[in-house]
Image (cartoon, rainbow, N blue to C red; front, side, top):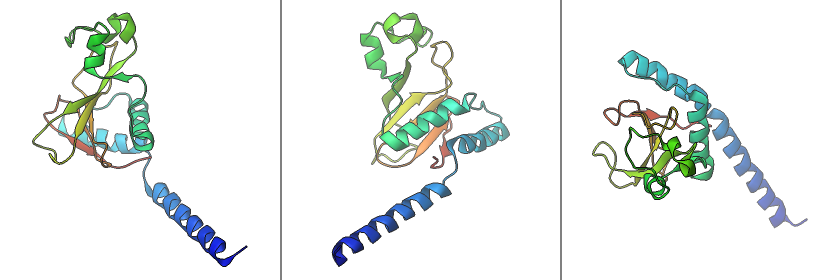
Length: 160
């Protein structure tokens, strides 16, 4: 084995070790959401009910850059027959059964305009859109939760 190959392997393993150490330092998404819930309760606003589901969504965004497959945009849901009215269950239309709205563009003066922002429903109940949303960008690790339909945004730290 040449010195060059040995050096490349050493650099690879050092890089891999650095990534593993960085990931080990990140809290689990479940723990991060619990911390956010503690803050939300202290503020007197609604909390996240389905911690495990939101944790899976956060991990999917981090690992794949995509929302889980259950999400469709509101335009796609409308093409499939949903009226777009938030008082109508998305699950009342067979093609959108068990789908959630996510991936729509989101614009807010509270967030950097240099990035594209998107929103995704969280804590969906029987296909009805509530007031809880995840706000995220694909150009960085920033994630925010709102439980009062964008009145307040609470940052969710990077998690695994």
